[in-house]
Image (cartoon, rainbow, N blue to C red; front, top):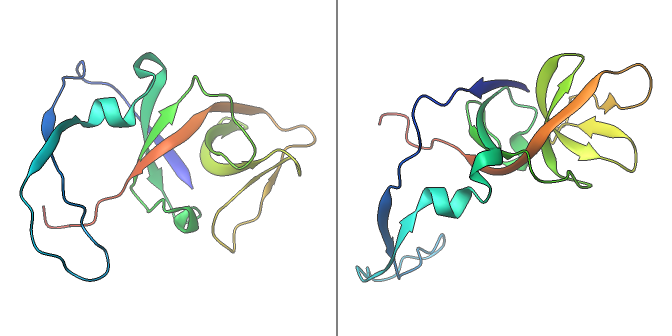
Length: 143
């Protein structure tokens, strides 16, 4: 999976939107409830460390099983220490990739089958840029 870093074009502004009290079942429909429980700013909800956070755009299908679709927007936190099983953005020999960190086996591995793991042993030039904390996938393609 290739990664494109997104440059900040302007300072972030708070965008507060309504958060409805009713949960939306993914199974059987329920009666609509239009009571607003709170207001939600996605910056507050998705970005815990603003000065250490950046966005990247995913390209490819190696991380589909982790819920990362082609062209997904990745929210990446540089301040988090990568742990076993975290999805990370890493530069491998100068090329950015999005993979699962397997510290026990010393690998970067894809979430989907059919993609070989990247061994962290040997002469590899590796730099982990951050931990992917959230993924934004576009579902409606005609918007």
